[in-house]
Length: 164
Image 1 (cartoon, rainbow, N blue to C red):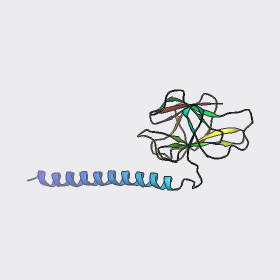
Image 2: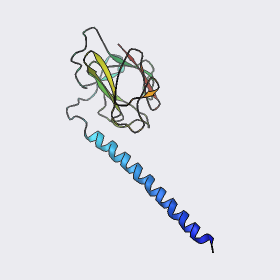
Image 3: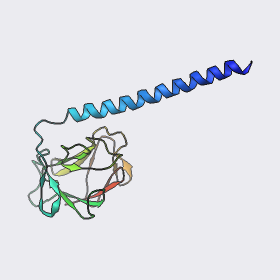
Image 4: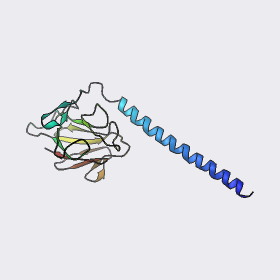
């Protein structure tokens, strides 16, 4: 008889934890959907570039020096052969979205996970508020990071190397 109030309290505690978990999952999904809806309407469809890599209409590089050819090389990513190269002259978004210039088939990637764009004479990596984070050389990206040759970008189980 004395165990009955404890059992009821445990049941209510479990229900509260369950509802908090469902709330957290719902908010995460809605945030991801809202981020996808905010993608620029003028983003072009990805087109095939030499070597089978895709490239598309991200932000303009503007101030990049003429002899610099920024690109991203696949180290390991589902759906791509290691060594596949993506041209980054126009910048690119990375994620699970069909509108991403670099589509990522990884359950840990968000629809609009990260973007690479030119700022002055340098390429920048920006995490777009992804759920699981973007990593640059093993450190989580907070805001924007300047890319340097041979930097390794990790999104979920997918890894890419920045080259110029």
